Length: 111
Image 1: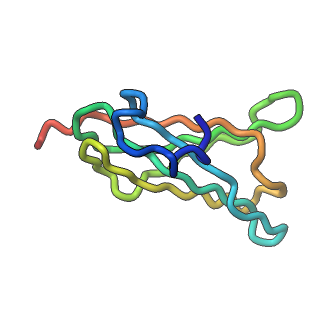
Image 2 (image 1 turned 90 degrees about the vertical axis):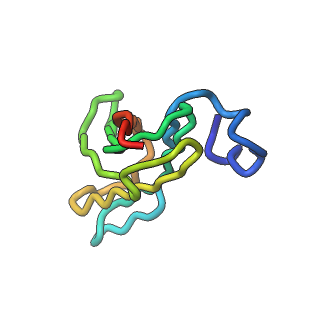
């Protein structure tokens, strides 16, 4: 499921029962570096917290050249909640095209 299909989704019942992460390269400048923004959707049926987006960028021959992570905003999500994340890679000298995103989180038992 690509990020372009999200506007067609009418309700969360059509999404898989998992925490979903999607991102897209948003900007590149030789002086400022590369940016990647995205969203995290909680569709597991329970609130979650400590949500961290993890990014691995691949170079030639699918060799990892960069790995980093960032907390989402907000850091807690109820069922059906959406958070966003932003990576700004100042020293990266090319557009982020070949990458893998993963999301780490824990259950929010305080609810």
